[in-house]
Length: 410
Image 1 (spheres, one colour):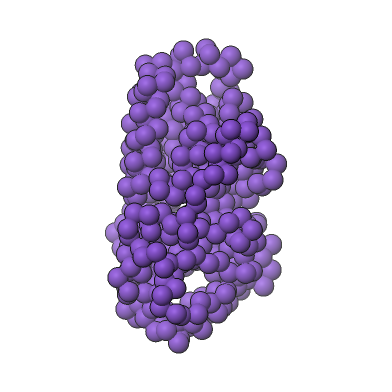
Image 2 (cartoon, rainbow, N blue to C red):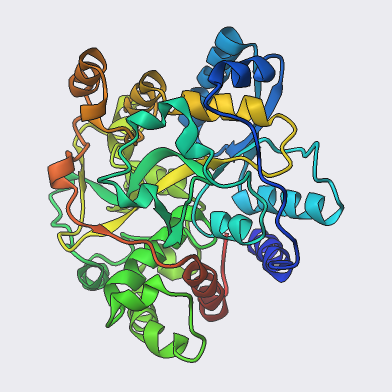
């Protein structure tokens, strides 16, 4: 509960000061002279604020840091976050204090409501830089709309895409249990399989994502979610969601009195036969866990035929970064075919690439095509339709209402 209160206070502070800052002067670096950018980046230390809750991701970032050190004489320090709002609040505080140069954060792993907040408050490096990176030429921005729009907010080159995400569920096929095909079916499924499902409490990312999935399936008119929350209609729009949650909670693991901390805890509960369904925002999650001996090889992924949420995650540079040149070089390396290929390997991470295969050289394309995505990873044709993320304001409001109704949180 304390963690939620702290996160809620951070969000309140961030939104309270929104709109009180004036825009900063534009970033004038000529990115067409990339050699000059690399030269200025040499010797810099880049403080990369990124979620630190998964060892495989931490290991990947450590590999990236080694490569930047060897190739560019750049030191990358992974500042491990448990909530990206903490980093946003740091930049807010620095701007309020007049620290418009020499900030403590150089790059942030970000998307959704945190990006919307930083964009609104002019806390990001000026527009367009991401699309001027040399490796942008490989990015599949034409057929992946979430690369240009982050939770309905136009990106405008303020952040650079890093990976794709899609909500998938997974289960142990050896148990012979039929799986539900929608949120409504899941609610009914929990009545027949009492105590065999749960989800992390908000504000945990995957728990909040589950609520957005449920909301997207429950509302009468999904298009309303693409606009900011209207308090006048909030109760009416969300009534079907909370009616179904009310029906489901008594049938959850431990009667809905307590909730798993995060997706890692959810995965362990599936492995320990405490629950029958786990889920994540990565198509390779189950394959990665199988490869690391965390789940049996009888586990398989599935999605709802009506669609599941999908988005892109990004990296962004604060307007007052101390090592903006180093951050640019790091962001560009993260878009390289080499870094994207390694990241998509389920043994390493399994994060889907943002690159377009047809834009790659034949040898690089062949490497992607030869990559074994794992026995539990659904191919692009099997991932089903993608549901759009709601406007960022919906998540904040849904989390608040969830806490008010159910009184527990991580």
